[in-house]
Amino acid sequence: MRILFLGDVVGSSGCSKLVENLPIQKKQRKIDFVIVNGENAHESGVGLTQTICENFFSSGVDVITSGNHIWDQKEIMKYIENEKRLLRPKNFFEPSPGKGFGIFNVNDLRIGVLNLLGNVFMKKSNDVFEIANKFLNKFKLKKDFDFLVVDFHGEITSEKNAIGHYFDGKASLVVGTHTHIPTNDARILQNGTAYQTDAGMCGDYDSVIGMNKNNSLNRFMKKDKVSVKHFPAIGDSMLCGVIVECNLETGLASKVESYIFGDQLKNS
Ligand SMILES: [Fe+2]
Image (tube, rainbow, N blue to C red; front, side, top):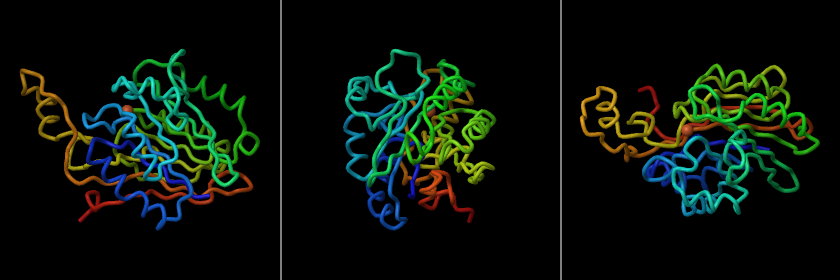
């Protein structure tokens, strides 16, 4: 089983790069299942809509995960109630629309996808380790699903590292999202779980984490007295994430590699 996880899709450029390239990339890289974090996919850079989700699904995405910006386009609150392939963080305060976990079938194999939100420097939500603990008491790899992927949407590397170790041996892959910068630490942890601190974004890297760089600079330098509307960079995007190869018998990872499609991050 080869699973491709793609980091946060940002704005229209990120969306078109994904939709145009995913079908062929899936074939070329022999991918069986695709998960994408879509919470920044709207043209404004925050939230996503039904149309965006449908475009992703028809280009070969199997599950869309999200994070703190999931509700920024209000229509999604209704859509998520009836679309189980779209997830929001499981540790959101209840009641919240939608679900934070789902089990999806591929050729008789069951893939669990769990979406969690970090607690440090993020919008308030339930304690992520408590919710993870409850989850692991209820669900077991190979009993309830054949594979488990955890999208941990968080700001800081230490919390992501800790969650990786917490799920080690209990998930196929734990991958971080939200910072929009891919980390160079894809590896298999001691007990067999594949891990990367952040998947990076599917967006234009000639930017500040996907947003127009001049705008962001002005904001940091407090140059604009009148607040300028933030909007995504519109240059050509890259696709960034992780490919994990899973062992059918154990559900754990046999191989993991960073996935980077596009030229902007080439060091030349
Ligand atoms: Fe986020």
